[in-house]
Length: 500
View 1 (tube, helix red, strand yellow):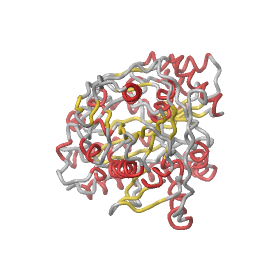
View 2 (tube, one colour):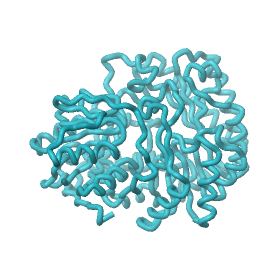
View 3 (cartoon, one colour):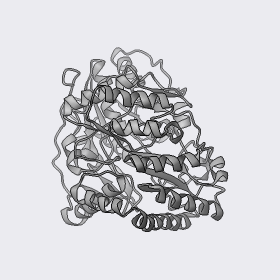
View 4 (cartoon, helix red, strand yellow):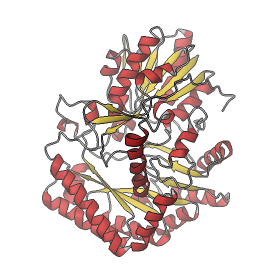
């Protein structure tokens, strides 16, 4: 069969400084390899990657970046046998609905299957839009089974699948990832991404690749969908397998910078040490970062030094709050004293560290925020390189999901939920935190500030914040000077296992 995998355009609030920075998708290249290895041909229509400088207004408060739904479908080859739509988050919900509708309009007899993180928690709207099948959980496990059953005309036996007359709920699990094939990035417009010089993690030299080394998380934070997605399970690739994969991408694409997008890379000191030891043993001259974060309690000074020596230059930590009361409400286990030690050690060693905080959790009061302000000031003095603050977002099927009114659209369930009663209060709190950060860092670590200024102009980024400043400038140019309204639409090519 010939399968087209479609990525939605990126959707963000207009002019919001708190939007995410898009990068090379990690999920579709892995999925493409699995499908190709089952004897099928695959193409990827990456709406954002094919037109990253193209902005269009969307709804009242949002904007899209990339190809629009009708343009995405025009890029699908006419001889396609099945279409897959990937929906990663709530912001992509409406765009995915439009893509499904456009797909059924041009290809009325071609099955459309939708999957991704968001579809695990949202089913009916996609089926009502015309999707023939919806898959929950990991596509590498269920999609090849679906293709084989469609090809052979066999009944659907797996769980986590919905469609006409189908409603087989999923048992949360993590499929074995050690033996999953390496990702195929050939169908993606890599050069377009590399020319941007920005991504979810700091882009040091233009060329990078995203990858994952583990899935899942055993913790049950109240604001996170991960417990429901993976059922509290965590599974990781062996250190040797990880370095084999890095070597593969280095040979295939000439990259030596890797963005490891795990939800929770480190759950044990031994695995962290073995990974660093494997890189050192092979004498690899790679750099890598963990933009989504690591578990702070699993690294000591010795592990941090090994990570640095083997190429780690950046990672995120997530203390979330400095109020023990709020942390208990969040069901978030964190050793705040160890956070301070790790930040200080990273400053001494040379690893750039970002700390994430969530404000506006139900039950949080002014005194709790004051504790967080004080803790942040201490971290800045100790050498914290950057900070990101989020406003609590009640994502579907989390323990705080009932905060969302029934009439709120999915796009409004984002990291700047303007409809929340305390939105203005928390926005001022976020601005106050960033103001304090800028002043204290300038006074206590002026050399780091000068290095950040240099990195913006050299486009050799060591932190997200420097990269974000550069991105804002590029985005302003794209919106008001370049104003790209039309793009060249052409059908994308098919790839098979032999090509990858």
